[in-house]
Image (cartoon, rainbow over all chains, first blue to last red; front, side, top):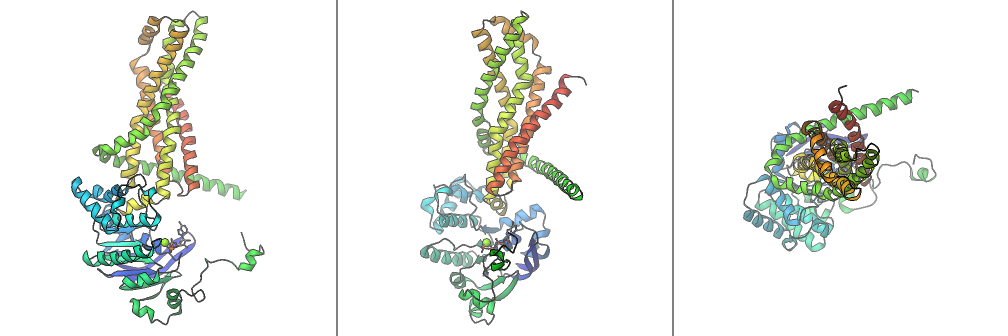
Length: 263
Length: 260
Ligand SMILES: Nc1ncnc2c1ncn2[C@@H]1O[C@H](COP(=O)(O)OP(=O)(O)OP(=O)(O)O)[C@@H](O)[C@H]1O
Ligand SMILES: [Mg+2]
């Protein structure tokens, strides 16, 4: 998958300004960056839910934004996506949520579906929760169910939006293993969006660091660890001061407090 | 002055843009309808939540409206010694007008608002986006079954409303006020025409069903994905579909019952 010269803006606000990425088949690629840089937006662009103002996204040789609706849906069947919010269907049980893509896209008999669903739920450690409704799950559990659903159709590529937030250390460890294992055993291509530096570095083959609408650093985790770029250093080591701004663009603080800026 | 004109123009443009989107939306939903017919379970579930759950309010209102018609009709007719025609008066008012119109208003309040809120919330919680990423078209999977269910339920609800209304009128007229039972029914049978009255009433209820459900699902799908946005969309559904029903009722009545 390649992203070339991608530009995108939400109204007046430019989110991306010429981003280039190459995501290798069968590898785990991580996209890191401070909160609000547009990581979720990037995944939505890759999935074809948003249109870029310039640039192209090519997945498996196909330009995502030139495809007809039908072709795009064909492509999406081979793409799993884990939403930051989980996006489970609230009127279906955990079991039915995971079974949903199978029922929509295949004619498998019910016994087979049951088999597959329980297998996927077992992988995320929630087989026992298959009868619960989404509102009865915690945030972290919900996201694991969403992960089981994302892999239900055995896609060729999975996009993970913040898979580690809201997970306890044990689950986190299991998830890290699981993502790596899925990637290697099913020959998947994985894209992880995250700001958990430690966990992500542990499994990623290649890392891109985004900031201010541009790629500010890239390389294998080891190479990035030795980098001299102050942006990447600050981000990876979590230092409050440096070139990466912690604040959303804002007028001068003192001026705002004194009523100088617009409210 | 220029500013006023500019704002007027912008509002006008937005209105027409939304109108266009609504029609495109209807087109896509209609394309999804054949698929729904082949997935009967989805449809049944929606007919249940849209139609069957609206039944109680329709039954109760129907009885009361019929009883009021019985009282009012009797008071007027008795002055002309024509209280035997009570059956005709009650039945015609219900079948031609009150059945379709009041049932549609109740339907907009009970089922339409629920449809908008449900679809709007699904959008706000990214469930629709999630479906799209699973290569499932929400227009076909979520909207089309609900649209079809509304379209099928509304004429049935209107018919039920009229039927229990007639019973309510009969109870008051014959049971309480002493109108002759045989005359009540036989005059009704003689004077209510299958084509002119019943069929036209059915056409009205079908049209209202389409319009109310269309507004409801569109408002939900087009809602701003926040709690406030969904709240506003729900209000708009009730207001717009009530106005649409009353306005269309005038147009349809003019076309059907008068030769203007
Ligand atoms: N609908 C929208 N309209 C306008 N601006 C938006 C919209 N959605 C997102 N943004 C802006 O786009 C930027 C990127 O948002 P995005 O959700 O992609 O961030 P993110 O990198 O995923 O952050 P996080 O790590 O917190 O999830 C944010 O600064 C946000 O203000
Ligand atoms: Mg995000």
